[in-house]
Each structure stands twice: as structure tokens, then as C-alpha cells.
Length: 214
Ligand code: GLN
Image (cartoon, rainbow, N blue to C red; front, side, top):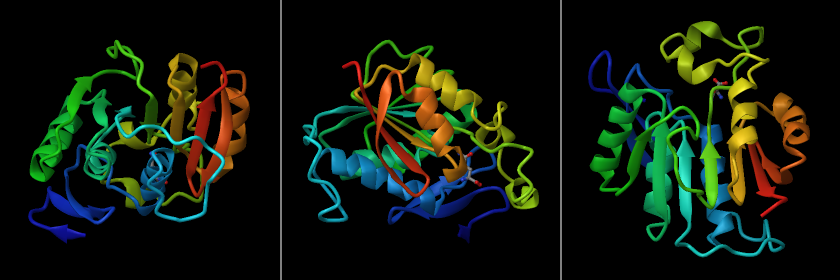
């Protein structure tokens, strides 16, 4: 990570630099696989031959990045799939300002909405992607000191880290729902979603769900 002041830094994500402040989560390599998962949905696979079974979506899809933080996911998706309409939400106004700066820096036209989950979202996106907070404060393998420079709001959730992910599953109605969570949580999430969403695949920390009702 390169630094330009004590507070603000730049972090590489999917080959691009992103401004990171204390108001947002630092982009992590495990989240890059979320980008690959969306690219696969529109037939732009970076890992050839991984998937032939799914029908390819048109690139003009609407993608909602929920809890965008630095905006690294939303900006990367807009840069990689320029035909897509990308909307980014966050409950934190400060985070959205950082995301807006990153979108401007990369010339990525993205719409921003301040919202707790889908509360202020009045349309149905084709794809929801979400790297919500999922760390359980009780996990003893987590290096709390290493995480202490990032906002708790972006990292920790109640219900063993699953409160927001479950809340999102309750309200989501998109064709695809792509989530990041710790691999130890994947089974519980898959079971929780199973009346609405079927698991298509997992890759690292990423879960790809397809609606069973649409
Ligand atoms: N993967 C991150 C970590 O374990 C957490 C990211 C998140 O909560 N969304 O540090």
C-alpha cells in the first residue's frame, strides 16, 4: 500500500488504485473474486472454461453494489463492464464521499444512494453484489489490532457476523445475489437463503446465488 498522508492511502484493487481513508474498509484481494464472478455472468470470463452451464446475461445489466465503502467494487465493475448501469449504496455518508472520489478519479459514471440495505432503493437490480460487514467479534483467529484502523461499521455484525447478510437475503429480489463472507459462514448463509436463492458456486470468500423465484 502506498501512502500519501497519515490518513489517506491508495490501495490496489483489480489493477487500479483506490483512495482509502479511515472511513472505509481497505480493499482486499479476496474481494477481487467477486469481480470475476460478475464478469463470468456477462460472459467475460477471466478464468476460461470455469463455467459453461449458466446462460450469459446481457452486458447492459443493472448492478447494485450494496455497502460500497471505498467504491472499489462498483468502480471496477463499471470499468470492466462499461455497458452496465452501476449503482452504489452505503449507510455511511462519509464512505460514499470516498466512493464518489474514486469514481471521479477513474471516470466511472456511477449513481450513489445513501441507504441502509435496500431501504432507499426503489428499483430491482439484475445483480446485487455485497461485501457487507461479516466479522464476528468473538472470532479468536482475527487479528483485531490489524483491523483497528478500519471502521467497525464496515467489519463487524451481530448474529455471529451474519445479521446484515441475513437481512439482505430477506429483502433482496434480484436475479443474482453475490456475497462475500468468511468460508466458515457459507453453509449457514446457503441454508438461510435456500427458500429464495439457490447456490450457483463459491469461489474463495464469494458466494454466487441465483433467484429461485424469478
Ligand atoms: N475479509 C475481511 C477480514 O476478515 C472482512 C471484510 C468484511 O467484513 N466485509 O478482515
